[in-house]
Length: 254
Image 1 (cartoon, rainbow, N blue to C red):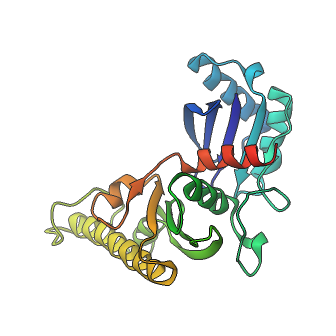
Image 2 (image 1 turned 120 degrees about the horizontal axis):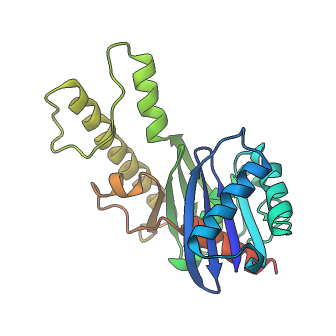
């Protein structure tokens, strides 16, 4: 089995592959105060309740956009799995040329997602990841990572609205029944929901114009289902593309 770990600013996502089957996956909050032992006990319990054994893990591969967490998770892997993880970064073979001015600036998760989508859905492609930040990534027809756009995530924008506007409440984001809200909460929900849909459609269309109008559009991340249910500009919603990308990169570095 292969354990894959994606460390994001908000969540850590783990998955276990047995051959070409994604056996299971878990999501936990990213807490920079957690120690290697905290995480080790947590992961061991996850395996136990899923009926899996730590000793069956043959290899571990991870990506991280939270530098302080990377050595902690590496220590956890060494102590509890007796494995040194492959950490996606400079020097790791991805099989995808990166046409960024400084390739080291590109978040590992963005490269992993691009590799995954190009392999599973083809190119040219646009990848939209609804995370702490919303990232838009473009892959050329020849399979090159071109770059993209980064905007504040939905949670970040919503919380900023609550913190900076004295009379606006903290809200739960739901799909509104109509654009015209009849009260403050409904108006905020409408503005955020349809505002992000408009942003999604606008940026995707501009990227497709630059790389090819036939580009496949794939969305992932925690808010993908909610936002993409209100638009037809996304071809596929795939919550596991990062996990599959990590597996692909591991296989390309064996």
